[in-house]
Image (cartoon, rainbow, N blue to C red; front, top):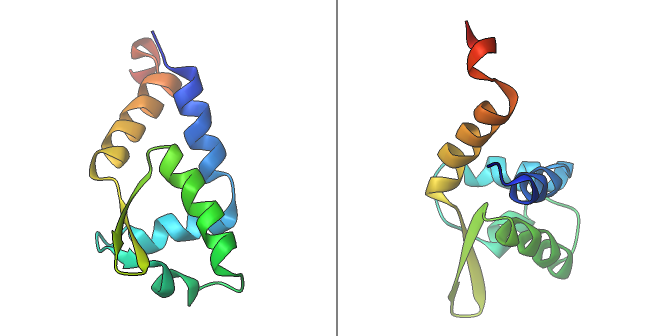
Length: 97
């Protein structure tokens, strides 16, 4: 049985160009401080927090607090699990041949 709700939540989170850019910035594997991420955008810290909350709720990023700043990391297992779910969803065994 497929988890349509989970796939839809991930796709919805990734459907925003700013959030896609955030995921791209985090794809290096490094943890980035909110202040580092803000350097790449023309919006405020509360707007970044909103985007990060959506990505976190979808299981795409994790957050840790260090002093006054939040540090964000791309969830290691997210990429593999999401690609696997998409492959299962979009490519049926009979269509792979």
